[in-house]
Image (cartoon, rainbow, N blue to C red; front, side, top):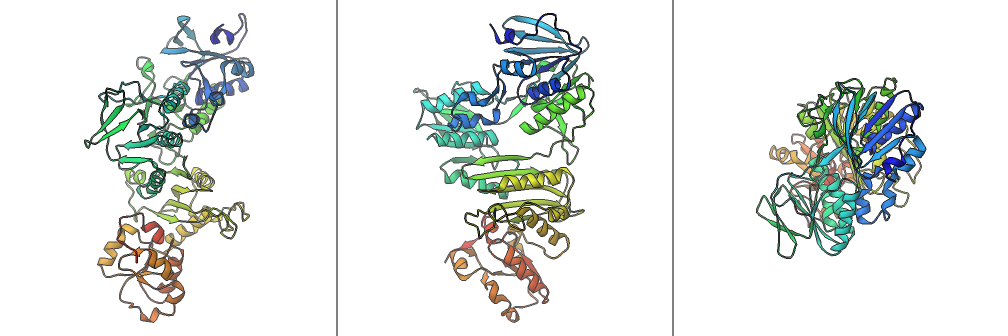
Length: 571
C-alpha cells in the first residue's frame, strides 16, 4: 500500500470546506495542523513532492557530522502519524505542477498518474531550492547541496567514504558554515570558498572577524573574496576547484551552499503575482492576489518589520509563524503578519554567533550615516557574575538611532549566554523599543546566570551615555586621523598588559595613577584614552572632561582595536 493510499480519506466522508496545501515542511505542516485545530469538519490534503514531511531541515548538517546519530531523529512526523493525529491526507511523492485559480484546481503528478484536485482555499508552501549556477563542471555527482534528508544521506555517505579526505564548501552562509564545522568534526580537511569579502552576511565586518578566527583556529581554511570559476575532475575521480583568482583547491567532494531561490516555476503561468526574483507576493494576511490562495515560507515575499521594505527571509521561525497565521486567515480569523526582523543564531565550534535587526550595511542602504543618523556600542561583558566560576566573555555590538534612541540591531559572539541576550534585544526591537527600554528591563539575576546589571542593560547604559553627550567614543578606524591632528593616546591599562601588546605611539599611564598625573597633561592637546574593553577608558574620559580636557574614549578598548589593522607593538 502506498503512503498516498494509507492516508486517503474514506469514500463518502462529509466535510464543509476543502483545503489544499502544497509543501509539507515547516510552513505547510504548521498550517495543516493549525487548520485542523480550527476546523474539525474540513477536508485537508497536503501535497509533498518528496518522501518526508515535517523534517528537521535545520538539523541536517548535524546529522551529516554525526552529532545527530539516527536518521529517524530528523523526521518530526511521518505521513501516517500526521494523518492519525490531525486527520490530514498526506500525499507524498506528489508534485503540484500547475495551479488554475479561475477554476480553483491544482494539477498533481504522482506515481498514480496526473490528476486535478479542487479546492475551496489553497496554501502554497513550496519552499526554495539550492542555487546551482552555470559553472563549468557543476554537474559532477560529487558536487552536492544540502536541502533535505536525501541530500544529507548523500553528504554523510561521502564524508564516510573519505574519512580523512578533503572537502570544499562553496558559500559562507549559515548552511555552509554549519556544513564546514560538521565535516571537520568528521576528520576531513575543509576549505570554505566565499566570493564576498567575509562569511555570514548578517554580521558586520568587525564582528565577523571573530567568527572567521574561530574557524581558522579549528583548522578550517578560508578563501574569501574569491569565487568559483570552474570545477575539474581528475583521472582518479578527485576534484579541483578553480577560483576566480586562478588558485586551485583540491577536493574529494564539494558542498554547494551559495543560497536558494524560490521553487515557484510551476506558478509562472498561473496568474499568481510573483516578484522579479520569483517570490510569491503576499499581503499582511499572507494572501496572494487571489483572495482564496495563500502562501508562506521561503518562497514568499513579505516585508521587513523595521523598514516596511519588501523582502524575503528563508528561516524556519518566520515560516512557522506565517503558517499558523495563514491558517487563521483561511478560516476567517483575521491576523496580520508584522514582518520579519531577521533574528538568527549559529554555532561555530566553541562559539555562539547571533544577530537581530539591521547591521551597518543595511542601515547604510537605507541612507543612514554613522555619526549623523545612527551609532553603535561595542561591549565585552561576562555572561554571568565574574566572581562566580566559569564566566565567559561576550562581544556585543548594538546599533541605535541618534534621532530617538530606537534599537536598530544587535550582534553578539561568545561561548555562553549569547542567544538569550540577542533574544531579549530582538523582543525590544519587535515592540519598537529604545535605548531607555533596555536600561529599564528587569531581567533575571543570580550569579550563575547573569550580573545585577545584565549585558543587555549595560548596552543600554552605554548608548544612553552617547545620546546624552557624556561620552563620544572614537572608533579604531578613526584613530589615525585623530593622532594626525595632534591627539595623544593614553593607554590606562596595567604596565604588564601594556607590555604584552599596545597600539604604537601610546603612552602608558595606568588608570589608578592618571588622576595624580593630570597636571602633567596639556589641556590644549586632545586626548584619546584606551583601556582593555572600554570601561576604565570611559571612567578616565569622564574624569578628564570635568577637569577641562578634550577627551575621547577608544570604543571597546584594546580588545576591539586589535581586530583592525592597527600598528600593534609588543615589548
